[in-house]
Image (tube, rainbow, N blue to C red; front, side, top):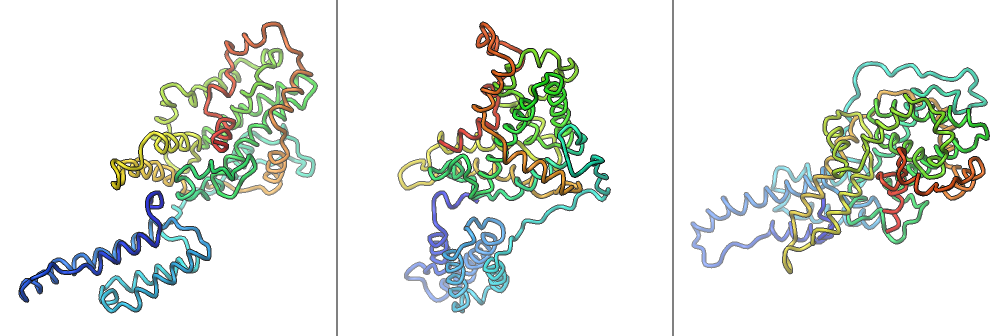
Length: 403
């Protein structure tokens, strides 16, 4: 799974074929050569063909582009024209796998069937033509957000997570050439959308209602094991333009504030997000994990552990740690949610998220709603509602992309 970090696909194939065509030790007598051929050479050749098959079935990390197609055709030709390889019983299966890859088929990625219980009936507003946020049932909004986020997460490929590919210099805040970047962009826009919908109201009562609505949606996302969307929502509510609205927050029901604090505690950064990690370990799919933790762990491994243990010797311990994280990510990609999409609601959500303004623009709006108070900076840093700086928020994910 991590082979692209130290070898190219053609180099790996050449190394495996070199092993397949290994030479017998010199000066063997006929009887010894026969024994070596039966016990050593045949065993190695069986293993090489099986490794090739497993590589293409389970650990294929190459992009589906024309150079890869050329490489697969080259591999197929080398196998078909080799009598020695074709004598191995599993060679025919290997050729079948190559043909599948040539046709762009994903192998060994089987979605586990969701529970046989039917999807819950959607709770839709009476007027679907003129949708407003507060008209959408919080549970249903959480479901639709979960469908959107789970689809984004399911598209992430392991190769996108190697060598900090999501933070390549070619990346930008709107860079979506990989599924990782698309999910990062969605997370940031969702957080901004939450803040924008709170701040768009001149009336304090409506701002309070919007905060209550989003806290309830975040709570429902937690119940659905959708920690990604939950984190974006609480990040949006924790950004400075929303956080600093002291008079607004003072009118929010204490029960709602307590729920928000409970969600913040779950995602708190203390002890390397220990509470969230423990919760995730005990969570059964379907689930949408918070991507930021995985990217942080992968960054720590990439930057903190050398590629080589000594000149010319690959650090396989580093690769094993990376592979462990990638396996953790994959286990939550295999079971879909048993939820029913509602096109009108999803269109409303996606349109709003994509049109959301940035944090700086919202801060100016915040100051107009509630002018700056004396000693505000001191209160902000010590208050009960922590801004995104102390949480692994969507805004923090954005900073990773630009590294």
